[in-house]
Image (cartoon, rainbow, N blue to C red):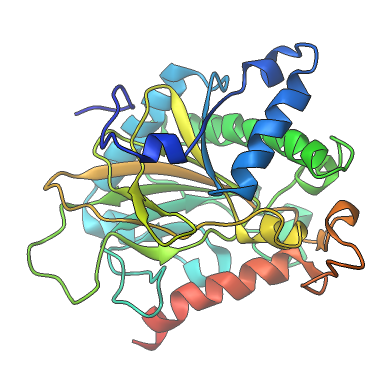
Length: 332
């Protein structure tokens, strides 16, 4: 079993449509490095809304260990996994069984299982005690060393996300530090995903992950080599997004699209695991701090292009999106 990407799959025009951005200039502090990366991310975010990043600085052994942790978790008996579902709809923490979610509410439930963690807080943390939205104690499987590995990965990709947000701020005409105090205690979610081989007989329109856009600012995705991710271009054509060794797949979420007054675009995507193999992926969704006001950036609004969205708190926005994903499952 491969635990981390080591080859390209599904080669074709996707590689030309989805750019690969080198983050070394950003990580090294090279002269004009921030500006270079900002320009490249900005072009991708205004275009297809997806991009790969390489030389990202996340340790390869940590990536391998986190994939191993995902394999270990999903290999647990169903009773052990279902014990980690406490209050999921209120907390966005813990286990989601297969067909427990509809990313495309118009279609049958998704053929995947998932496990979510968020910012790791103690039960007596004031943010939990006061009932701050989406603050909750993480749930942990009884697997030795599991928590430590997964939290290390959470911290690593959180740091990566903040670095990319500094480039994004610069591209949008804001101070590179604009997002710092909006992402220092974020409603970020690390989601481990397992897609069993898709059965020959499924409900009409049922796939691994239904067509959707992501909800937050930016998503940092690590797929295995099995493939299955598909991205929809602006002309409606679906592209198979290959796994490229040493890269993450990143995309713009709806919250950042809202912040930019649709200057950046979030892109519909889906997962079809039809190759007869198990598929694993690790997704990190960087949503802002809950009390952050999401409103149009000054550089993205003008008399000719007035604000398209009213201000909203990050917590209220996330709740509106999650409620839609789980409503059909709850009512069904």
